[in-house]
Structure formats: C-alpha cells, structure tokens
Length: 316
Image (cartoon, rainbow, N blue to C red; front, side):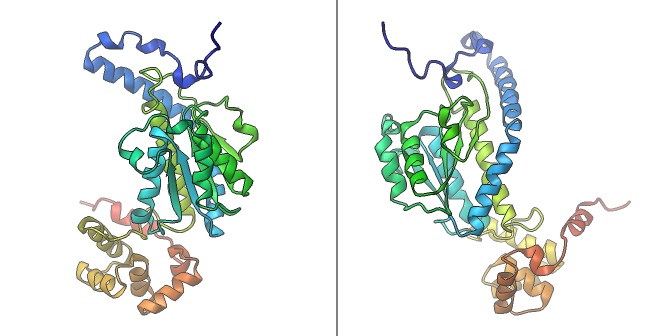
C-alpha cells in the first residue's frame, strides 16, 4: 500500500465543494463565487487579529533595538515577502537592509517559477545564515502549507542564533507552534482551484504582512497621523506627495513648501519642523533625533484636528 501523502490532509490542498462545477459556469458566476470565497478569507484574517497585534509588537520592539526584519518564503509566499521588503524604503524611508527578503531559488525565482527549490531545507538554513541573524532580529517565515522545507530550514537556523520567529501560514494545525515565538494562521479553507494558494491563501498572507509591516512602521514614528512623512521623493509623483504633505501640515503655500523641501534636501519631516519651529535644517535634524524621529513628539502637536478641519466640507 502506498504511503499516504503528507499534503493530502492540508486545508490548502482540499477540494472545495462550492466550486466543483466551476468549469461549467459563466465568467460572471465564477466571479461571484470567488467573491464569496474571499469574504470567508477576510473573516479568517479577522479571527487572527490578536495574534497579528502580538506580531506587530514583536517587530516594533526589534526595530527600536536596531534589529532587522527578514521574510523567508518560496513561490507566492516568497514573492509576497519580497514585495513587502521592496516597498519599505520608498514608503517609509527605511534603509534597504532594515527589511529584507529571502526567496527560495534566489532573485531569478521572483519573476520565473523554479519548482523544487522550496524542498531544500539545507539551502534555507544557508540562506538565513548568510545574513548572520542576531537576537534583536525578527525572521518571518511564510508558507501557506506550513510544510515548506526551505522555510523550515531558515527558521531553524535563525532560531539557533536567538532571533525572534514569526510564522505566517494558512494551516492552523502546523506542529511548529512549539518551535516559533508566534504563529499567525488564517484558516481560509479550500481554494477555488484546489491547491492554488496564490488565491485565498495568497490574499490572506498579503493582508497579514501588510499589517505587520505597516503598523510596526507607524509605531516607530514613520507617519504623522496617516501621512507618509518619511516618503522618499524619487519620482515626480512622490515629490508632489511630499509637497502636499508639507502644505497640509504647516499651512505653507506651495511655493513656500518647495523652498522648504529644497532647503531640507527633500526630507519631509525636517521641512515641517523647520517651518513649525523656525529652526534651520541642522536644527530640525537635531530636534527630530532628540524626539526619536517622531513628528508628534518633535512638534508636541496632534495633527488629527487639523486634518479633520481640512476634510470637513465648506459650509454653504
């Protein structure tokens, strides 16, 4: 008798009874069916909100201690980690080394699937060891099935170095619960196409990773209210956003805001502090440093009332 497949009992591999006749349906009916499944996925993520909040605190504490965040994954899970790490520098002005991603198969696997690389446990360990993880770092393993050997190898190696470990999976039954610091496991159920974890599992994972990174960045002062005050101005669109942020926060004219940003070398935070506090660019940097880079602390002001007033429709 053939051995039972170790994947057969996974929820990510199960056959979805709601979509058995999907190939006989109209496009509109398939769209409706997928929307129904995605609503189930959203509820599953919601049930993990307390664990997500714990993960945010783990990451925040690490960042405040000068630690790094490293995502490890394969396939869709790996690409989602790469996406998170790539978007941190332009969005929050972080050093590219602060949030990194390891993808099974390397950079080439991001654009072209390399099947089989996910099965290499030893390479996962080697990949994380190249980054020399430390106790203040957080390593986030991402594996929809919870079984990916490459990810497990990386997490095991990182654990031996004392790094904190968060595991994001869509298999709540994973036995790694006794091995990692935190498991976040939205039970999204069977996919519309059995085993296609780029669907509900991928969307749920993307949501979880978005919350982990975004909220941790908010907690360490990378926003002022909900404004992206650490934005990097590498494009015309981002320079325009920086200009609008300075205008909104300070009340400066667009012309004044451009002058402020030029004098502040397009550092949005510094430009705002210069205008609000009447200090020079070096003085603004010193003020921000003493405030742990927090705009709220540096200015001693709550931005919410001003934003609400600006959003309130003019009385007729």
